Image (tube, rainbow over the protein chains, first blue to last red):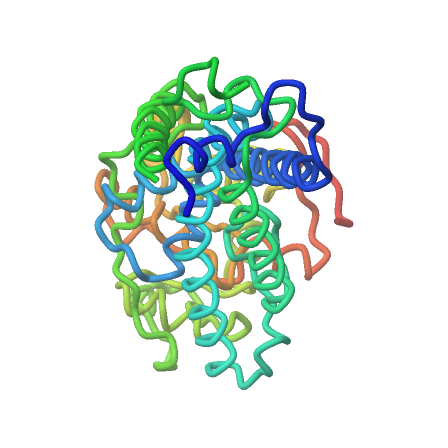
Length: 179
Length: 205
């Protein structure tokens, strides 16, 4: 049974300790996630009207103010989380935010693809459409696989311990404990 | 765990504030209070016979035979007047077009408009109308026929634009070219590149 102090030290690299391969894999996952979310957010932020139209096609949100708010804020929020991950600020919280976004998005994309497959009589994996994910038209099975990969990478980062090359791994812990 | 949740909450709050601020500051930002989609989705599977209010007009062959039935049915269901390619072309070649008694309005965004529009067409980007409305309204108020188009097919921007124009111009003067610029391109007709009346024409895409 670990004490509270032991639990805390298990999630961070002790001074003088060399980062392990697991730590570096966390850094890689963080950078890949950060770069991807910045890219995907930027493509949407550069053309919010196109993103707005794509969100509308899901026929989930009908209230104009809510629909506009999602289309207006989500791309920037994705970029914000991506920047935090790249810089290594509030790393685990940022990765958790990605998970909280990826789960509902993947469900919605899955349901929409299912609807298209049924309407057009296509095999599920043959469905290709622009899901508003920031990657343009894409085959649904590829998109869902990508999302699963992003989900696992985010999960990896959430459960990672303090990583190298971070400006501030934990937001609410004293700096002395996080380095 | 508590730290993680607190951190996520802080990110959500700060990120939310920054995101809405960025939208406000961005030149491409959305107006949160505006209803961009005033027309409710209408059934498209119902291919109603294509007729419209212009059937009483002598020079209007207002039958959208070449445009998809779905597009036309959607326009009809929304109370808009659809015109087919032949009618559009006839009106484009008519002297009324040169006298600006018939005008064309391109409802697409600036990038698409610049890349190629029906020669002489005014631009009215429905999502950013403020820059275009003054010149379009001036022309529209004098015109007898206003033909609005976008890409055709699933593109609804021409419908929204027609609805917008109908708030200041009598609705019976407004028509939607159902096939849109895609049909115009497919017919190998010339398009004007760049600004309106630039004179730079091309036919191939």
